[in-house]
Image: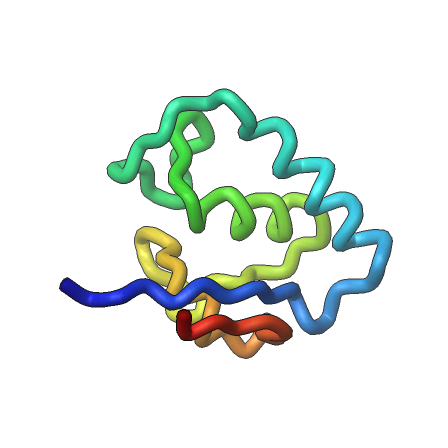
Length: 91
């Protein structure tokens, strides 16, 4: 079984106001059922990595999807040139 590695990042070109707006947007997803089949254009269904991607996209126009694919996966956010990883754990 492959071990997951948690990380914390932010959009590198965002300012404090844009980050605050993104956090505010995340709250709208609380309580919405998880749907791993939701592509990025689906505004009704959500999954873990789509939430921060959509929050930054809507708050500041910054696209933190590293491969601009059909879905946005955690690794896509991790490798994005638009994000800075500032906390990383291998435990």
